[in-house]
Length: 413
Image: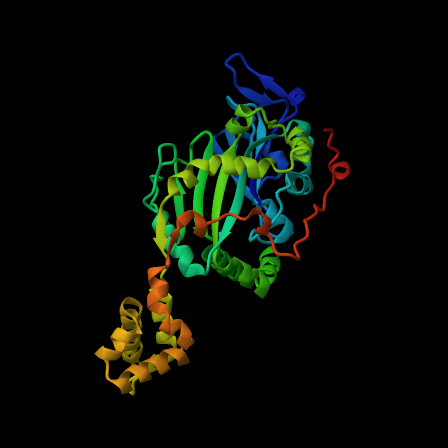
């Protein structure tokens, strides 16, 4: 899935002047005339006519509303760099209202981004040479489906200390908000991270619910989309491998970075995004070869038993004594097996514990084979996190279509 696009859109060269020191400026231009929301100023003064003037104006990043989530942009209008707009967004989010799954195709997402820029900032858009738009970064994300979110947490914990010759642990906190980072964010080729989708999704939904309650119309639409039970179910057990593929890599591989040339390139090479993602992560998966992880899930068992057998005392305090005793029995059963446990417990107590575990949702056959299953529950990590490119979207998925087209945008490509 194409999870993010970062684009660089230059101002038309006919509007730009360069002084003897190499600084750029736009002819007859005042940043305030564009009506941008986030315009700051330095060194405010009054001229000989008593008019207030600004020696330097700057535009901070601001967010443009779309049908769903917002899109970030910033206008660099003067200085050593050629004047341009930087535009970045998640195509999946602005097209669908979520990025649980989505399309690999660049064209529809890019057209949506340019369309909203044209619609919200028509004067600025008219100054840009859109046909020379360059892609600075593409974020590609593909997922492995694990048994549940507890197994996802185990996998992240397993990966937190791993590194290889070319892929090093990030200097960030290695596990931060359900995410493992690799390498430097400022690396010129790739930016990699691995995270659990379900936790991220729930955090995003909580944020959108807060915005929706404050009458944010976009957030209200997003909450409606994200509240879909099928969508929420699809996030369970998803371990996401997100890779930022930067312009430097595209140039190294002879892949065009001009947006419209890149769109044509993708039409001729439809799997190129998956191929780049695979190339970027080959070293990571190679480092995992031959390693294995024990896939036990004691936390979810204990939590389940507390939910079933937790009580409240007459004084109002929570008690998990029975749940804790059953969990100890379950753990011993997993370690030693039924035959040994029968000798350690009286017959009545043994069968009562077994009956309580069955009542909590664990079948008798499962409990009787728990000791054997535990011994065999060490599996190769690569088998656990296998990326199935054919199963990245649900069967009912339909490719999103941009609400804008090239004619509306008056693009010459």
